[in-house]
Image 1 (cartoon, rainbow, N blue to C red):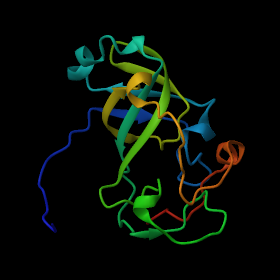
Image 2 (image 1 turned 135 degrees about the vertical axis):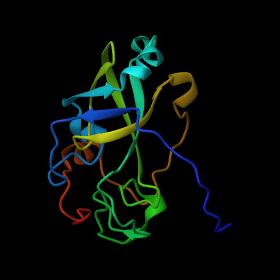
Image 3 (image 1 turned 135 degrees about the horizontal axis):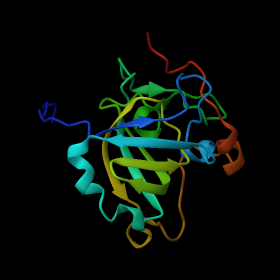
Image 4 (image 1 turned 90 degrees about the horizontal axis):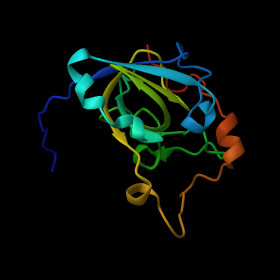
Amino acid sequence: MDTDIQFTLKQIATINSPFCDLVDMPVQPKGGSDVYATIEFDDKYEEGLRDLDGFSHVYLIYYFHKVKKPQLSVIPFNDKTNTPRGVFSTRTPMHPNSIGLSVVELIKVEKNIVTVKGIDILDGTPLLDIKPYIEHFDKVEGEVCSGWMHSSAEEIKKKRSDNRFVQD
């Protein structure tokens, strides 16, 4: 199973946010709940944005373009015990494929520009895809377990990044 699969992902847009430095950013969308960003799509994808404005939230799937060396063990920002965790049990940018996922509020779609709110993404980040959040598909009902993560919603909202994942 150690096979490299070769395929190409295309950047379809660029995320323009107020966060120009990896340090002191929100570490999850809840921490940037009042922060707006625009996503500028290549003109050739404008037609694909039709009807998106009927949704309240969207998934942004993006490339962590500043990650140069993934790690299999990390100390996540929201781990109160500072315990090294397996990267696949975290939402850090250090995963082997460096793909990010955020659910954000959709504010408006104008031609090839999408405005969103609740952003936790570095300015200039390449967007790979955008998909609508659909409550009947995506909402998890019943008991939900968050593994090792025990931070409260308020703690998550206040948490900001430090330099632990900054790479030269």
